[in-house]
Length: 389
Image 1: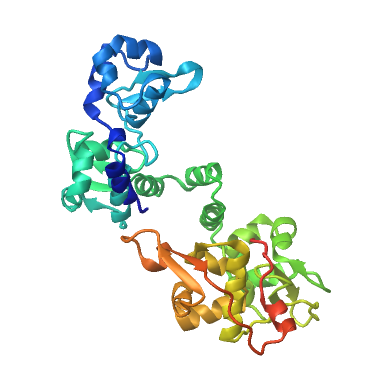
Image 2 (image 1 turned 180 degrees about the vertical axis):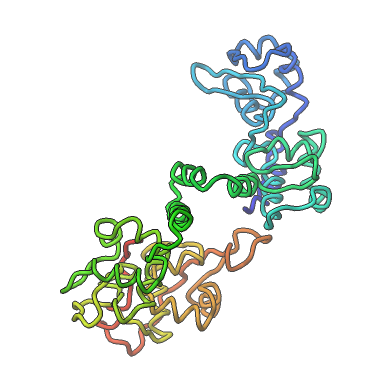
């Protein structure tokens, strides 16, 4: 998350830089009463003219100052605005409500492993970010603790991690059924399938569907004897949930493992997967599985032209399977493929601290010049805004 422009903006508009000390008179107005709403106009009046003069915004716009100080105040814009003094124990700041978003974003990008020794991690923060954090909080540890939606600091062990990492580690200790409830609540379909599979294996370790060959033969019975069925329709309407759970999350890979039973292919457009029994004649419009580099270049360019700039890691979601395989085997990732053609593609990293392959956004500079490939081959190869399963 690149927020380096924050400091440049602060230098260009110094009148809007937050002065934390301007909050002191308004904290005093509440007299230690937390969770109590006070109309903005009343709060400003009770704070006095000197306190109001220290605010960067005047009149109704003064609510913006309290919106920038959400580690101390809660605010509501309705009916002229209102302000509430937060309980000191409140610690639910996130990147949007943080008074020092650039510093917090830097720390977020720096935490790439499960957990770190907090002292060493905080010492490694650049001085500019440290100053930004200490401007609003008495210590770096206090700043981290206040951003409870992002970070978790264990004071006993001295370990620092992201809150979602803590939640993930804690969830692994829960019973499988409880983990499943959490996955259903968060609508995480992949985790739901994985957990249901674990529960079934635990409850019935002798289930014949645990043998992949047995599972493939059972799935084969649900494929039409003639014609084909889309993979989406097969999963949603035909196959029992138990089979889907045992197949895993990558259904394309599953069908490809058993060519003696299935034909798996893209029809008309990239990622529109269909399944037919082995030996059945395939319909017209099946996409090829092999492409030349020149063809893939035009396919990639056409995809970006149609869908707009996008992260490189998402590009493969819209390419035909044959093009994806070629890029993976030859270049390892779309990033290095696009990097080879600076005449046609621009690559911009969203953050200097993140991996280039993961953080780069690719944009189209120019469409490649047509070669000798026929129009029919280009039409068959190029994606037409394919559906995502």
